[in-house]
Length: 290
Image (cartoon, rainbow, N blue to C red; front, top):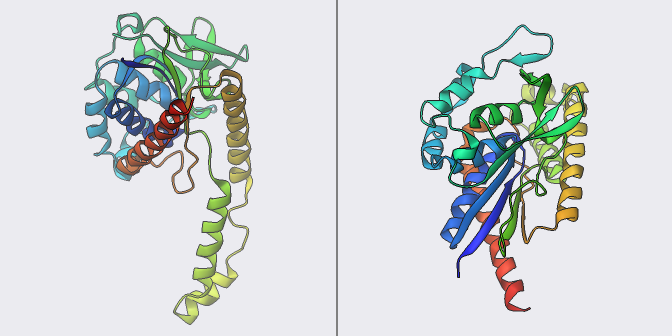
């Protein structure tokens, strides 16, 4: 019997590269993805997969280092965004041609947010890349997409893991891959350990400099706002999983990787595979005991 999957991929910036590993592991375990819904980076990975170009995208990501990330960032002088976001989409379109969503071989949708109306917007028709570009419009970083009187920003603001938007088929398995969470406790422990190592530096001059370094340097206006935003998104994703109760939930909370670690794609993909295999194993064991 085929194990058909309705797959939902969350927001999460570069951490969303773990979605590639999750997809690869699902297929390796004999699961067949028959529909997709995604938000932000999840919309991008899901759209590329639905277009049949996931392997090409993975190979391209291997070429992305810090220098290339800078080249792909088309900085803007606008008051409401830092980058236009056109250059990155055009680079991906070099090997993933745009297509109408309704012409994709499997049902797909992407979630964005209308900043003006304060509501979720679901793309099920029209240009695949317009939908992706709207869904990844990180507030204040990428230029919002203006469409039909709307100002569209990142879907993670309203629905970071759109389990309620994916097309369902009879007897399919609802699978959610959630990379929206951070393991803040582990991050804090790592930072404390690093601070201690710095204070025990070999040279006397380094010891003096490190002791003069403020202990709370990581606690500033930017980190405060960034964490508050992340915590709100995380709580929304938790509420959605409790509401929809996916058959398999791959909850990947990371401590080592952040939203802009696009140059670490292979490591993030490996994390996605490992966590998905573990979740599948738990699901199959539970099914056997029913």
